[in-house]
Image 1: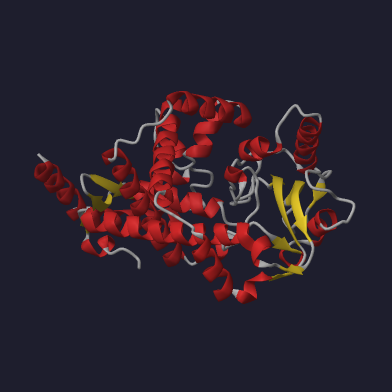
Image 2 (image 1 turned 120 degrees about the vertical axis):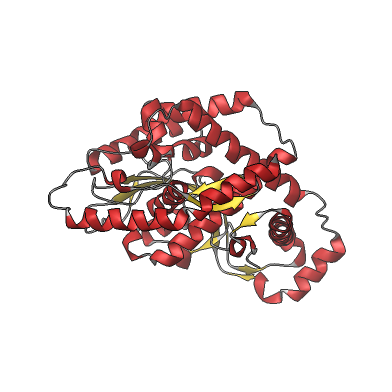
Length: 373
């Protein structure tokens, strides 16, 4: 049965060049008729087809377009992105996700349906209705497919939760940090312990984006104007300061920054949680490094820089901890040593997990089956 399914998928894949050709022809025709078709739904020119076969599943053109759109929505300046790099990166991300989802099913990962229901209900409330949530989760499919419902959203959430769970299990198990290893790490990274003044903090970012902006961050929400976005942030701040809402949970639910899923805990590119003055904008430094600001304190509304197109962000910050400049002794560096060792071990395990999954998988065309070392 498996061979029959794969055979049928390969037949679909063989037809892909013709589909791509048709897509290109339709795209060219669309450009020629652009003036006549002003306002026509751009999704009407999309042609679906199989790009990659992964075991008994496929990745289609529409799935790739969806992933490209999702990545572009997370970019501040998507028009500057290299098209080839963007497409290749999106496809590799899809392959990784598809393989991890299949592996999670194989490992019989179970999730709490009650938590999924609660997650969806919370997002529906935050997005102002089911239709808005469906559109946010599937911006491209919402234009090209009929019948998308909240059940599709739940299915997507289940998949992502299962992937997160299997990665957590496989990358955290078996990591042991002994005192000897900690001491060796400290001695071999001497330069890392001379630290400038630094801070750990959480943030909530509410962004006003003009209607013609292509940027669509996580938790995207439309505002009529910048004043409406600021009013939303002000109302949220009142609820946080009154104790009605929790800062971290609010960040996860509504913040439009890249760290909302971690409760707004801001991290650097290397995963570190500590930030120096030089890492941050002046308007953040003013609050976080003010000697009067204490751990646990929440800021007022902090307005970011206004861009030429009118885009502007409103921030709410919460200082978690601040440390003065110092050279950390081994005793004081122990927490960070553990965090660094664990992070490095998890990255290594994640790499090994994906490499093994790729090795065991059937992927066609074969060039997509080569794991990026």
